[in-house]
Amino acid sequence: MSGHSKWHNIKIKKQKVDLVRGKLFSKLAREIAVAAKEGGANPDGNPRLRTAVERAREAGVPNDNITRSLQRGAGELAGATYETIMYEGYAHGGVAVLVEVLTDNRNRTASDIRSLFSRYGGALGAAGSVSWMFDRVGLITLERSKTKEDDVLSAALDAGAEDVRTAGEVFEVVTSPEQLFKVKQALEPSKLPILSADITLVPKNTVRVEGKDAQHVLQLMDALEDHDDVQHVYANFDIPDEILQQVG
Image (tube, rainbow, N blue to C red; front, side, top):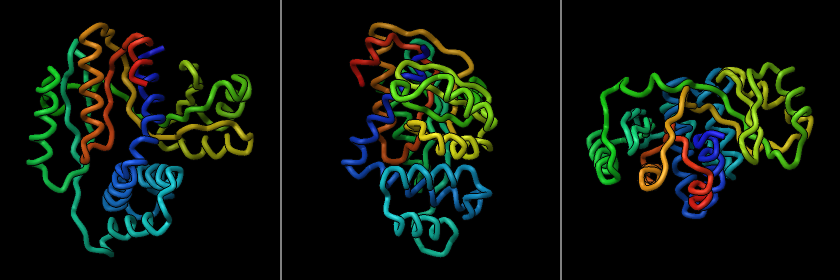
């Protein structure tokens, strides 16, 4: 199993900590506002917005907060103006890293991200230096202990999913970004134990890292994800399960 998949599942659990600190609500609200601004305030025609709204609802963000974020993105309410920026770079061991941020101060955020990469032995690269190593997909995860693979395969493939695979404690259903919610909705009547449904970036190939290099990579990932402006971090590492489990 790739380290990328296991890290994705660990992040789902770590979101509970972010929720306690209030950080997750803030990030989700910001994502809704920017998605509405860039792609329109109708979730049916804006996959990025629909994903953000679904995630906010699943996290327990009040409907009033979601509505205000939509209005802010549509220009109906005043507020800070955020822009989406993707930073690209490398961590220890040649691991490719993509960092998606939403910021109202490009210079401040660029300085912060560069400092974090440097602190943990990485370096920022030019635009396009690592993004070609990733594919954008829809990804649905289901709790493996509470369902059967045949049931997931049958429901997902009938609904138009591209692939179903096993990743440790979960099943992963891979879709095109446009088909994510159609497939998710097709799985829901079967009462399948869905843990998450996101549009995400997955690496085409992974880089194996161990020992101190692996520790430095995970420290960088944690530090980046803890930054207020960072929405998502993607990387192509493959780290031994025992090291990932310590983090989890």
